[in-house]
Structures are given as structure tokens and as C-alpha cells.
Image 1 (tube, rainbow, N blue to C red):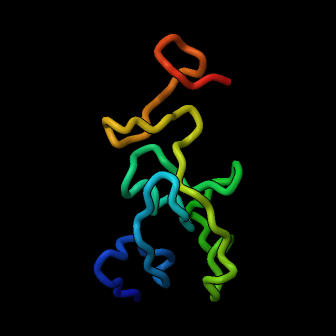
Image 2 (image 1 turned 90 degrees about the vertical axis):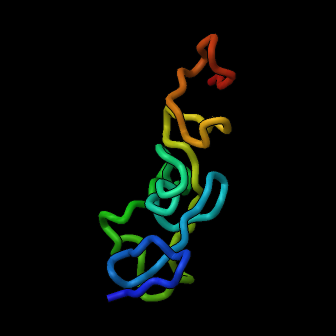
Length: 99
């Protein structure tokens, strides 16, 4: 069983301990992003890295783990005021996000 050091709050498959990540920071799993920002995820292009199937991403050597970036989930945008990813309506009069 892992005993994580302070600051390493995310435990993966009872083997690894990771720190939370913020929007724009590197990550290995969505749980790192969700810990700091609601409705965010760890993405490499369009693939989201989740802990449900750790063997798919986490092998014995961390150097072989795929890295992603914390981003808001599809249909969300980052709101600095709320420090959260909030639902956005693409192309609406109340949004500056356009397709």
C-alpha cells in the first residue's frame, strides 16, 4: 500500500502518488486536474486519461507514461473569477468562444 508524501494527494492503483495539476499544467490522469478545477480533465489531444483502467496508462516505469495537459472538458471554458470550468455555449452572445 502506498503512503503518499505531503502534497502528493492522488493515489493511482495503490502504487503511485501524484500531485494535483492546474489548467495548462502537465498531468498523467484526470484525477490530478479535477482535484484543483471542477469539470477539467487530463487530455492528450482528444483522449482523456482516467484512473478507471490504470494498466492502460501506468506501467512500472514512469518515463513510459503518456503525459497530457489539464484542460476544461468539451463544452466548458475556464472562468478565472470562479476558478472553475463552466458550461459554455459556443457562439452565443454571452460567450467569446467561437467555432
